[in-house]
Length: 460
Image 1 (tube, rainbow, N blue to C red):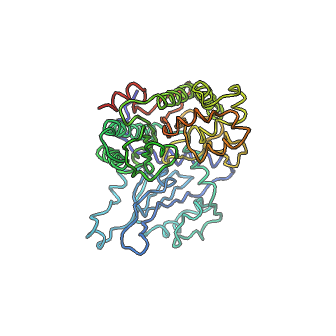
Image 2: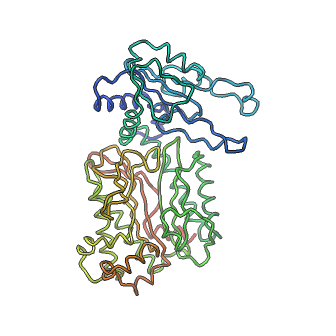
Image 3: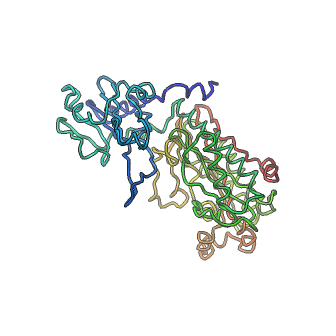
């Protein structure tokens, strides 16, 4: 296997991405010609303040340029496959504060483009394009600056290129996989550091700070999303954000956190005991979730229907909760058909991963009347080359479960006396990032998760 380091020694394959996007567009419409026009994210200032907001590059623009610099533009000529990047010109006033900007020659050597010009030349460049290139301009709605004019173009489309990029991003190339692999490598180290430190920590934010510190020390300056560091019953909140509570007296800690590497995300969740060892209730739930994940991962391959994998996770959860005694009074099939397991596993099994944590192309149906699938972020078959998160969980959220206890259709399947022993577990989620291959899968996540190994590190 080629090491990810050797892959990343080359340039981000922006022109190959542009060609892939154009090919998708041509499959949707005939006579696709002219140019693609995209803008990067602009420098934005905080309201009533002279400080700039934290910069995050537009993912559509990055996909076709690999450029993580603000205030840039791209023009891609479809007929010639020529890519022209426009970067901010040198401003003497700005140099005083921020140093010299990226020069055109530096940009040309760094990015997979054919030409680099100052952004002040965008309009004159558009005007000077040959007639063939002016048949159409394909841009993204609400992502074109007011000073940019398309008057010279016969046709203006502000929808198709966005769709094309979103669909093209589903299947990753080797460079994108290498970026995700590196993000996972850093994330695994950070999770391990938190696991080893948790028994001696005082509060959630102390451990969140440790996670971010380890990522930054290894070259990942940005997090893929706000960290979830949830102790005790806080872990029953899927996207818990407070992350300030004290740890004393809590059974477990759920950490859902991932580094971002050159605009590519990792998304990893681990749950572990704060005392060094899982108690009985926590161990039962952890083992159930680990089994849910293991069986679902083994189902993965090119063309597998994600609905089926998600359904299987629920069936494994039901079997485990029946064995524990939280569920009762019916067969596993009856409970599955009643959708009672949604009370304990209310979210989808996973989502596509890429430049966005919840990446594009999943086609969720949040209006689905079936509660089992309402929050499933990917619908349909998984193609080889896609990266999917596999993140089953079992949660004890009073807000979610109590309405089920009041509904006779569900309450008959729940043993409330047994359930009362498990509220303090909070929630257990285990999440890995998995690459789909033609005949199976490759798990890109290396963070420890086997119970014995987790407990061994948690005791340090």
